[in-house]
Image 1: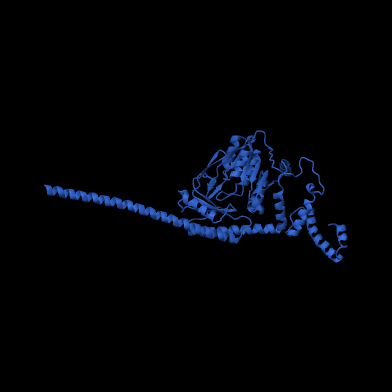
Image 2: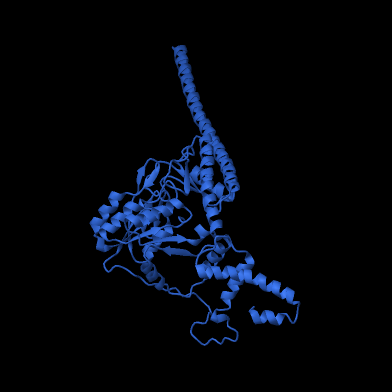
Length: 437
């Protein structure tokens, strides 16, 4: 409502009420004006009424919502089906993407779908951690030739015992050989360590872009991503390649979330996540030791933890996968059990030890992560249910062991009785012969 509307309202109700209403609306409009003037997230979150007012003001400025609108163009917001378009911006001779192995299907499939050939670089085992093999990366760059390499595709956030790639060193390799560097930072925004790695990589070498999920970092529904970088013109080029006409829902979701949280609210969530990571680590360590297992030592991974499953007869997948099924049916989401020796083919490429990020990781294990929004009660409930599942699996294992021992005992008894009967027959035969003679 503008000033004329408020003035007209004074003819219908008390001017005092109108003035109060105008002042209340002005307080909302003041917040909106500050947002537009400063162009950054407010420190303190907005209430829902301010959010709704802001979104409504934006919506009525959309030409599709103009009163009396008569649409006769080819695009009038009438959607019957989705149109997907692709455009590629590639180096003329480039066909390879150097990819330090991370067992995540969508990342791998995206490279195949775009028409490139991933060159998988196996990780190296350092203690419990799986880390980037820098020598292998540089050797492959020299073998293929920089002009034939589209980019190096590195990773920050990942499941332990895989840890973030050595971004600084990879960035230096990219700068030295003139190769673009793309970082998969899927849920790394919530980790100050992951973001520091990216900043350092860009400072000492080359990082062209880093990509992160909206849902994993900002607690919104699945369906959006942020592409960021350190070169404005490059990011603008990526933006121009966008074919358009997709849903604005992801952008709207993150806008509403950040406005409702404010920068202080989001920073509070980041702080709480760090605290929950430490708490989850402590509780998993205590529980694992109670079952003669151990929490893997992965200090370079700030988001994910892993616990060994050596005592669950890891040379047979049954007990390990059974634990995963039990957790799932008990409504524990996000936890993963990784058996030994799993083989899987993805888009024609065969991965040994799939899900463990290595061909031959030394042991089976269970993953859990402390992500943004996790609360202490979530950790406590997870530990309680994991403890219960481990007890059940261990009890069933003991039963199988008892049955196996009984079977072996029965076989031994059968052999002993047979031998005794044979000896008795021999004695009787000898006695009979002596009597006959």
